[in-house]
Image (cartoon, rainbow, N blue to C red):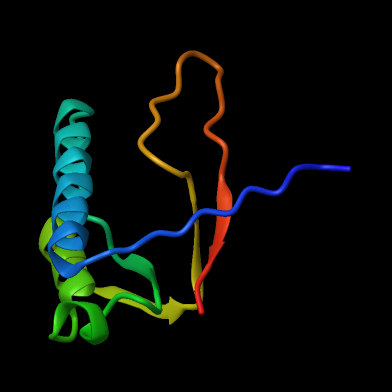
Length: 105
């Protein structure tokens, strides 16, 4: 029937922090170019269970970064996986970026 693709990923705290910083920097840049001046009332963060104190050696790394980027309170939870693309992709025109379910054990 269909094909199944299996990929293994190894993350470390340095790469995870760099990735988060890059994403939040891009968000700030897009926000400034869009002329957005309003502050969000709330940020909702769903973070992978593989992140957090076990990865970073301290608690609240992701939520502090989001709060600093938005000047808004952060609520959320840890999940056992992620929804998102594989790799960096920039859509062109009406092209869609495929989204995948990434499960972690």
